[in-house]
Image 1 (cartoon, rainbow, N blue to C red):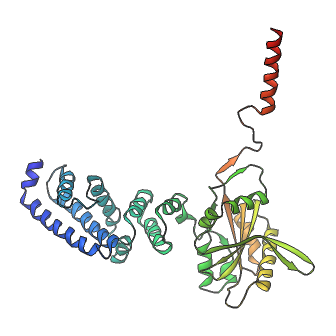
Image 2: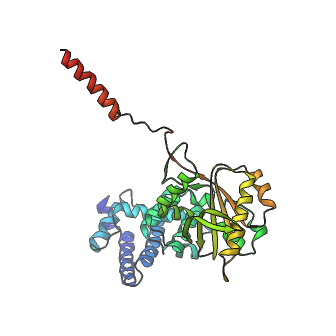
Image 3: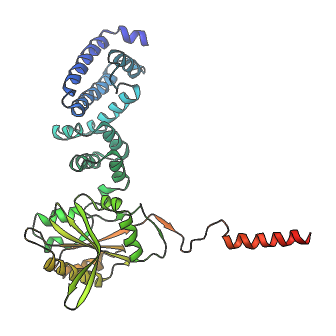
Length: 351
């Protein structure tokens, strides 16, 4: 099979043309390495699919192609048989949808190859995949961050917070604010005991502020916890205060470890009013509130927000790692060890 493929005229002509394309891609790659090489990968994927469908070159086609290309371009990475298979898989994932236009393809070629492979390996459909491609370009995600966002299901959670933004904020800010929030928030970086309270949750989140900001999303800047606000003769404390760079507004986050209650919305409405009155400056958009609770009943939350005049979003949060209510190691305590040692010493003395 190998010798027949090498002598095949059609294969040799195509291989010569392919080598020329590689050299052209190498020259352009000096300026735009990733984009040009991925554009070449896209063409190569299309060629591989077409040749495997039309030419009868046998099962050893990709192995032979890999050897020939690596022989001609020994200093170039990306021509292993495995990578050729991934190039084909990448093209097939998107190419099967005839509606994929030139613009989405150009976006694909701007994302690093490792990111592209992670996306097609973990996404179920093209719409979801393109969502992560576009967000990688916008937010400059590293591969690790990208994988985390995919595995946490960001595509299905973004814009799913229950809000009253449509009636409390002008367009287009209302749309952008709604898209900024998600439901549920996944705090898989925390390990909490089962009877944790709001103070425990707040402390844990600030102790992992980098991961917390990543989960909140791009644009959030942390300003403080238990931020004091003086209203009349009383002092109130905001659980968490942020400023959002894209929304150009303060964001008050209140934490509740139980179910959503209508009174929670009234309390947050009061805090937002205070921030608007005391902290908001010229150029700042209206302050928004985010209430994070363990559970929310949709209809109750909708009723509660319907007559609230300040912009509020209500979302659930999930903690995937919980410690037992009473921490007790499977190993004995110091007291238990000493007690047992005392017994053994007593037995030894009697002997």
